[in-house]
Every structure is written in C-alpha cells, then in structure tokens.
Image (cartoon, rainbow, N blue to C red):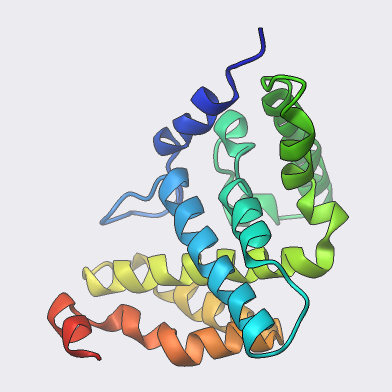
Length: 196
C-alpha cells in the first residue's frame, strides 16, 4: 500500500532552514511553508480583489504549502550554494524533481493526480507560481527582520538584498503587501494590538 505521503510531509518540521547562518530562532521547513502559503494567499487575494486578475487564492495557497516539500528528502540547500553556478542549480533541480517523484509515489493512485498538479504548479502555471516566489522572498525577508530584532546582525545583508529582490520583481501585489504590511513585522506585540 502506498500511504506514506502525509507522514513524510509531517517531517517538514524536522528540516531547518538557513543552515549557513547563526540563528537566534530556528525556522523549520514546516513553519516557512505555512508562512509562505499565508502570504501567497494574501497576494492572490490582492491580485483578484484589487487588481481584478483571474486567480484562485486557494489554489495558490495549496501550491505554496508544498512548494519546498522535496526538501524533506534533499534538505535545505543554502541559497549561496544553490545559485553559485548554473550547473549546480540544474543538478539540484534534477535532485528536487527526483525527490518530488519519490514523495508522489507514496500516494494512493486515486489521490496522486491532484497532488502531482500541485507539485507541478511551477512548470504548469508559471504566471501564478510567481505569487509563491514573491511570498517565499517575503517570508525570507520577515525571517531577516525577526533575527535583526533579536539582536542578531548575521541577517542584515540578506534583509537588504531580499527587500530589493522583492521590489525588483515588479509585482504590484508584492509591492502593495510590503507597503501595507511589511513594516508591521517591526512592531512588538503591544504595538500590533494597538494598530487598529
């Protein structure tokens, strides 16, 4: 029987991110995927409700939840390594594709097509996958802000680079998210509760 898929997905909580950096707060792949899905959903809601785009926020959120699932089997390869040169990037992409296929093989046949469509979202729906890429960058930016707030200067350069990368996407939904919500990650709990 092929029924191990969800138990494997549950292991996302054991995979830590930012392996090359000193972290004040460890971030699991599970935490990152949840935050990315929440942000991607918000970006898609803005796209649909503010910018009148034909987009399904639920579909975007579902794909975002699983966007890094292959890392359950591969681990989180640090960005400086992953993007060091095109050959490394292509080799890692091949490893990720193999990991995704292994995960999907753990599903019963009657469920596999639905999850294959979610895993193939990047290649099959690139015009919508950009919402997940933007959310992924915003989530990473938030991590950098949180580390800086905790007194960890290790993430300062990454914070500036990610903020610029988000702006460079030229995506109106990401720009609106950052202008409306981005600075609130600087707030304390008391300040957030007063921000009504």
